[in-house]
Image 1 (cartoon, rainbow, N blue to C red):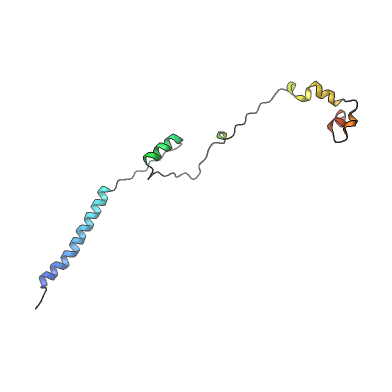
Image 2 (image 1 turned 30 degrees about the horizontal axis):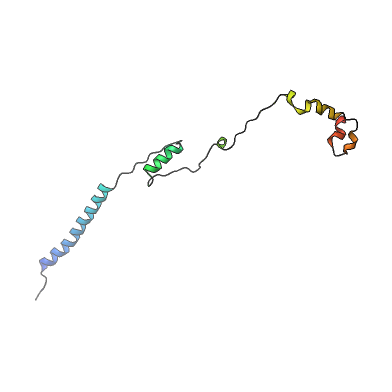
Length: 120
């Protein structure tokens, strides 16, 4: 006695691949519909506030492609040079000039500028 007829085997052999094809097609359509389209937007010279806002809105997809993050040097160091006129210099002050002509300059020793100042 034959349990499976030729027609039954043919139907079964065609049934399995066909249903696998339908399930695969359904999965592909579902992924195509559900998956959101991504869009790349490039922003240049953004401020900290703009970056924080973008980070809040798109934290899972936000990328910073900066190879070098730089902060202007003037943000850390401020250098303001003021040149005073010669008349405000201590080297033209009367006390300095009198120091150059001390009467007993030799008492300061050879290492002291006041000893040799008059000869310079």
